[in-house]
View 1: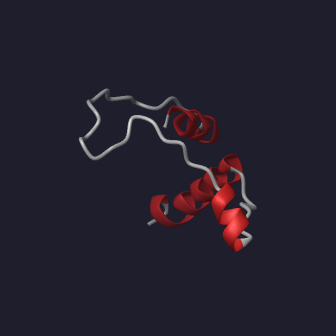
View 2: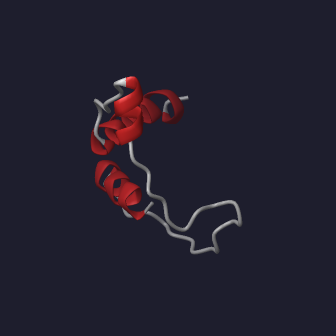
View 3: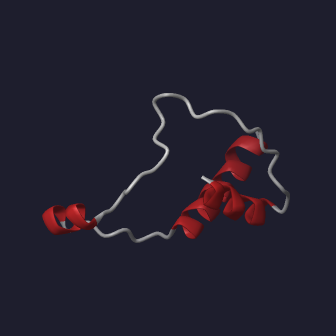
Length: 68
């Protein structure tokens, strides 16, 4: 999560306001997410990096939500 926040801070141009709280019991402390199986079985390969995806999201958000 901190990686996402750091990317968004850079895109937005301001530091995030963090509120430390315990993880909800349904959240995982660690994940080993991997698209290898999806690639092997389905031919799936991500085409958009996290940085590009968040930049696209931020542009959408500014246009649709902040302008509303």
